[in-house]
Each structure stands twice: as C-alpha cells, then as structure tokens.
Image (cartoon, rainbow, N blue to C red; front, side):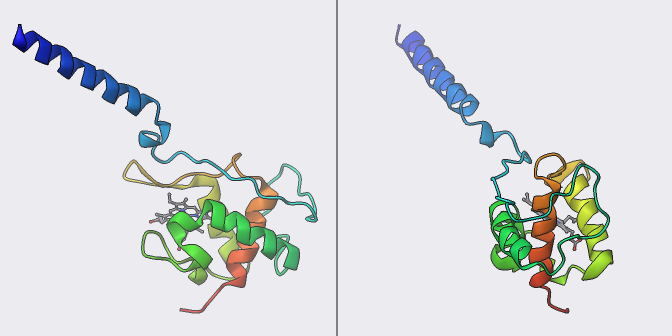
Length: 146
Ligand code: HEC
C-alpha cells in the first residue's frame, strides 16, 4: 500500500514537472528569436531587396533608432553599448564602411551556426531591413580601432 502511494506521488510530481516544462517555451527553444519592435518612422523605406551597403550611414535618426534596436535584440549577447562582456565578439571592432556592412549582412541574415550549434540566430525576415541597417548605423557610430 505504502509503496504504491509513493509511486503515485512520484508520478504526480513528474507530471507537474512536465507541465512546467511544456508551459515554459523559452526553456527549450534555444536559439529562437523574440524580436522587439523598433519604430522606424522617419527613415526612408528600403523595399524588399537587400542593400549591399548601409543606406543610412551617419544618419542621426537611424543611429538613434538603431541604438534601441540594438539594445533590444543584440545587447544580450554583444553587450550593452556595444561593449562585449565576452559572450560574443565586440562589434565596436567591426570594420567601418562597405566591408563591415558585408560581414554584418552575412551574420544578421545567416546567423552563426558553429558545429551545429546556433551561436547567433538569423534575423532574416524577423527584423526589417530598415531596422537592421539602423542597428548597423548605431554599431558603426560606436566604432573604435583595435
Ligand atoms: C544569442 C546571442 C547573439 C545574439 C542575440 C546576437 N548575436 Fe551576433 N554573434 C553572436 C556570436 C556568438 C557571434 C560569433 C560567431 C562566430 O564565432 O563566428 C556573433 C557574431 C556577430 C557578428 C560578426 C562579428 C565578428 O567580428 O565576426 C555580427 C556583425 C553580429 N554578430 C551582429 C549581431 C547583431 C546586429 C545582432 C542583433 C540584431 C546580433 N548579432 C545578435 C551571438 C549573438
């Protein structure tokens, strides 16, 4: 009798554990992106086709919008104010100009999957082109030489 009651208790605890696991999607959705809205009002719309070069470089409004977009979507890995705490590369060192734009495009579109592990999620179709180039503008405004 006693043993079966214990077993029932254990089963109950297990079921509770499973329920908690299932109702907490972030616990097993590693690498998924939960993009935060970034207002792009005041920026020239860019259409569908991806630009090869940042159309907003040096644009004050873009830098401002990009700062909040960066803080909401990138800072948890790349560090607040683009100062890396070591989890991910320090983007202040990302090359300026077109070369940096190219590497930026590759990473934000393709993400970084290393040995089958998603180190950085892809933001293609998740964050608009306008928002991504605004983020690039902000990153470039924080550039420091190595
Ligand atoms: C889940 C963590 C994570 C998030 C969120 C993230 N990144 Fe990354 N990112 C990484 C890691 C890790 C790498 C390094 C990958 C590697 O080893 O090549 C990286 C690499 C990069 C690189 C290439 C840097 C270099 O020096 O090679 C760029 C550019 C970049 N990320 C931009 C962004 C931007 C912009 C955002 C936000 C829209 C973002 N990342 C969000 C983790 C993240």
